[in-house]
Amino acid sequence: MLELDLSEDIHALRVTYGDIREVVNVPALRDEIARLSEEAGAPDLWDDPEQAQKVTSALSHRQSELNRVEAVAQRLDDLEVLIELANEMGDEDSAHEARAELTALTDVINQLEVQTLLDGEYDNRSAVITIRSGAGGDDATDFAEMLLRMYLRYAEHHSYPVKVLDTSYAEGAGIKSATIEIDAPYAFGTLSVEAGTHRLARISPFGSADKRQTSFAAVEVLPVMEEATEVEIPENDIRVDVFRSSGPGGQSVNTTDSAVRITHIPTGIVVSMQNEKSQIQNRAAALRVLQTRLLLMQREEEAAKKKQLAGTITASWGDQIRSYFLYGQQLVKDLRTGYESTQPDQVFDGDLEGFISAGIRWRKRKDEE
Image (tube, rainbow, N blue to C red; front, side, top):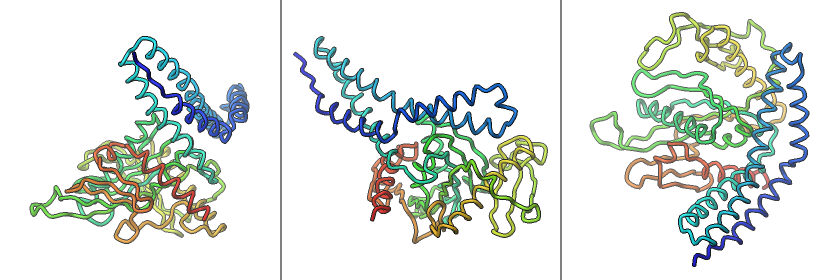
């Protein structure tokens, strides 16, 4: 007779889950959703498109957060029913399903628990991620494209809306840079631990000598700032260049000069956008990102918090946060936390949960020291 007993494991998960609900403050979250729903239902909501966008986006984020938390309670109840049925019927298939669900629920609750550590000023915001190739020639630009795909796959695994804002293709392989926006609650707080220099070591596919090649790429993570319009940018402080959007190999995507590059002359910050078909839309998107970066610089200076949000990333030796070894030992190792994976293929396919959780816990300990 089958006797599957997972009661201790489930009890431990319920205790952790109860703590999570208290930190999240589910009643207050429901009240906020009700308030935002009322605002979103106002007949004159779209008279102010910018405000309407803020309300609907906030409502979507809060609903998503509540759904993630509430779904766990139902899954815990269903798991107990599944275990009971498996024992009554002596069904090994149901027992196997119950064990698999216990593992999956443990992962979900661990992720929610880590999210409760995200209490920074901007942690609950969506994220803008920029990836830039560094030293290493074609291997570096290829590596940058591998990282871009990794973050896109991460977003896909979590069903997070993601938009590619800009891509600059290299003349050889891969990309020089790319910027994406992940529109999900706590995307910035979660992914900000990915910011820094990433290092790849492998046998280069671009050389004939079969020598090990080391290359670098920089990852910058910024929050999407709702109040970015607080920063006024005089027209004479920027230079706007327009050009044709292009794809890999220079293939034309547009027959008009719709892509926009904005250079902020006082700081040297450059933002390019070519995702939208309209030059006006690309200019507006580029200005929004530029305003965000300037606002962050302003707040960092005021608070004297060097490198807290964006930091200086050189994409070379000396400041790497993670190494990817694709020869011999096949290993991905985070140099801050010591967390590692011997499955680099899975990591490049977006399996970043372990690295991100370890990074958030490491950062929290550092902040408390």
